[in-house]
Image 1 (cartoon, rainbow, N blue to C red):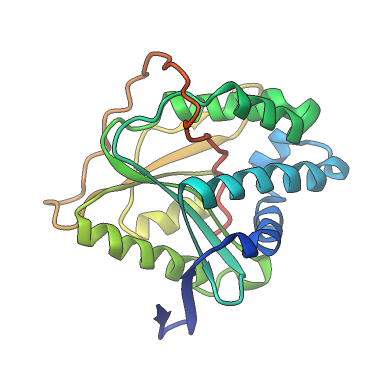
Image 2 (cartoon, one colour):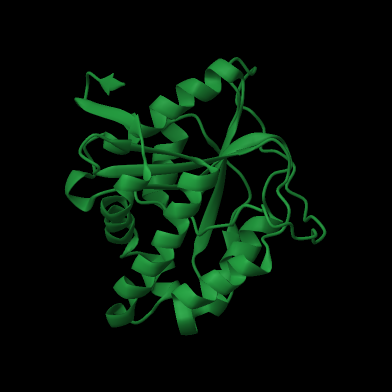
Length: 233
């Protein structure tokens, strides 16, 4: 699909796109309050992020829906959530620890908080959206999301995401999302804004769904991994 306003063409990503899209994720998320909290050392951050986002993108390609642009300057990773997923298996925790090394406790804590406070209602989850810094503020991220939103609207399904800063929070509000109760990360961490976009045709602005804490779930081998969701749109 090509958006006339931006000239951007959206297509589904393939494993051949892995290296350039990992670079987009690393560059888009390199700066910001969440990045400073997760990996305070700038000298370590790029290598840690490259390993972590390689893990994230490969999982998205295998178990989710990944969209990109023809020039591979942007990426969005979505997961269908018809029901709450089971807890991530031990292999996922081992992979995160291998990727993030001494920073694993905060990555694990962030993933656990996202899991506990995730909506129960069936939806599609935008785990990540990232745009190359050179292409930001040109409408590329909006075009990328509009493409998937139209698909959800045709199916009558809602969407959920977590935003890590006020600029992206404002963007998602313009795209029809509603802000729910925020998460404040411990250990002097930043605020994460949980956001919900109701199904097309819903009367008024869709209320934020129930996110009451869920009891721990038994892990299954096919469980989807949870991922940090700092926004790079």
